[in-house]
Image 1 (cartoon, rainbow, N blue to C red):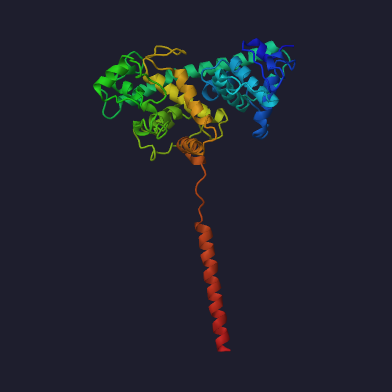
Image 2 (image 1 turned 135 degrees about the horizontal axis):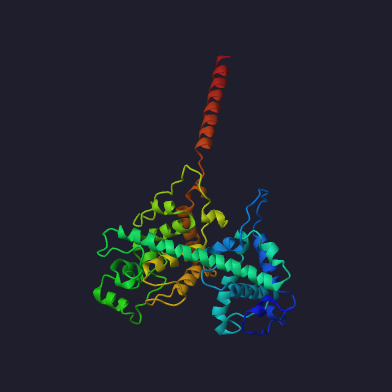
Length: 409
């Protein structure tokens, strides 16, 4: 029986270190890759059993998180095939990396990214384990198709809603833009709109310089758009000499994230031009409300690289004049390249301690912005200090009393 990889075209490989065949040549069955990934996902933390009766939920509705926290662009079948190949390489010791063939470096990066992403699926698709144990490959494929359809639909909803939301925020910018944005139309956005163009422009270029601005608008070589947009930086300021400083810390990006994963009301509690270190905490409604998307997707009060990358692309897309969603570049902006750059920014830190600390601190910062009430606070030692002081003073009083009694004897 062919493996799942046989349903997706992928290049063949050879290895001098290990003669084990790749998954596309094994007899393990169509769902072996999913079983292995599920095993790894479960080993990272078991969820408590919940015997509460659940409403019947369609697979496509469960899949709403696929684009948000798994992968924004990849076809789900290609994604899991890449993940399976990476797992196979780890299990067998097969070396298909850049040392064996320098041309494989990008492929290895893609497979590692896919492996990390696919492991997220079981966290928000409760029936994942049962579905992958289905011995019929056509039903497994249909199940994955439904997950992808749900993800695509949810992505479309976010695009539609943020078109109006982001325009509304920018229309209140200080100073106010000379040309107000139409909340229902993208045509007036992009590089030709002064504020949108400035936010889309790379920190490597000075938008305030008329000559530079003209070159950016004319898509001249070396003046392209990309993941280093001003819109993604703290205070909308960045340095070409230190592109990590303030990266992915703009309050406009935080607003977009809250809008998508929390609620529109949560987004309104933050000003797009607030100080990123002193932003107001999101207000909780006193009335019972629907569970937010972050809770539905079992994010467990933790912001993830994929979620940040998703929000960043949604922001840049809302700033652009792109007429409709698609993988192609628009005005020189490669949304797909931006997404994977941000994911790799967090995941491809190698063994560099300083880079690891930067990434760790950035995720902590994000957790404070989105889930402030769940973050660990500094230990409050006031009660312990008071008790210690009380015991010391009582002991001193007893010692004085004993000394007085002894001297009177």
